[in-house]
Length: 466
Image 1 (cartoon, rainbow, N blue to C red):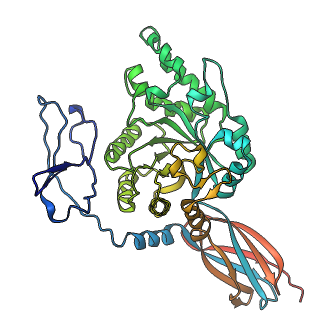
Image 2: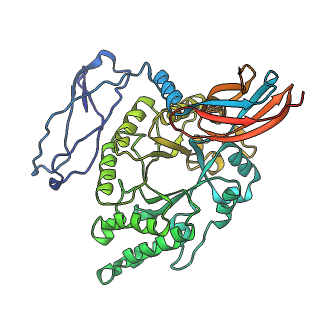
Image 3: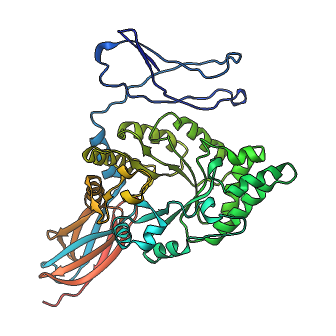
């Protein structure tokens, strides 16, 4: 978009970026843009440009339109969606001959929606403060670096597995995302694979070593990881396709992983698809490509590394586009680097609310929480050796453990012929209910509130001695 100002100057703002070939036929281009608010009445003309192909290549544009996105009501609309899609009615029936004194305490122990963080393997093993903060604040984990090929295989046939960290997470009942089997960036593959790749002219060494990699890592942790990011950031890099002469290896990687671990959910994962709209349509096209070629893709990973304050209206629009595939979406690597603590907290909350309120999103993991082990220290939730919470950390705790959790003390139930009924609407997840009579606990019940239609009925049969 080219914006001409009345003083004769102009500004170019990129809306969409993708690769198109003649074999593709017609392709849809999508992009979004936020007009700077300080332009006011200084804009004289706005041009929409499509370009980038060589001058000798012709192309056609068959129609274009702009749609204004309303902003004033986004928060109320998001909260209404949260109430609808993240909660369910519960009927708690206390069957007893002495219902008058019965009251209940409802405590949600865990969220069905996945709230988690990347973990630094060394810090988790060696730093007690780090370990305590993680287990007290997050319910899902992704190991930041120690499952990547460069880290696990520093030399051919030499493995360094993060077994200790995985066992620590398993012992605490924390589900783990595997990140990542491959990374399409040529700078992120093992040095020795680049060195061996020259042999591809006589033998398919890259393809063989890739198959061996899946056999090693997916085979080793089969049944223990919930997800795998299969080939990270293929939207922006193409190492394996380039070295093997075509896209087939990218689909094969998914098949190999599925053969080794049939129950794991396999993900595409990429950046600049919700933090920017420039590549969102290209990502949607890539998802369609993989599905059309039979790759067993089970989910869409959207990273979410924000350089400016997250815009919840645009995040929702981008998620809507990606959700058209029908696959579940996970925000896999959220962070927002900002020195102003209040702005950072508001930015995190906006991004989290946009994700939590979207029906296609099943989980959200931030990409680290401690400033001393974060690739973007100003994105952290806690600072210093004493892990002092900043405003963003307090906001995380308020949203995850207060605003989006159900904890109730109920006294005014409905007396029935069978006993007493309590009705409430709760967030999906694990619950513990304590039944009290005259202030004393007389029964305890646990249940899981799944995201299904209709009311969930819990029955407790108790005898109260008056």
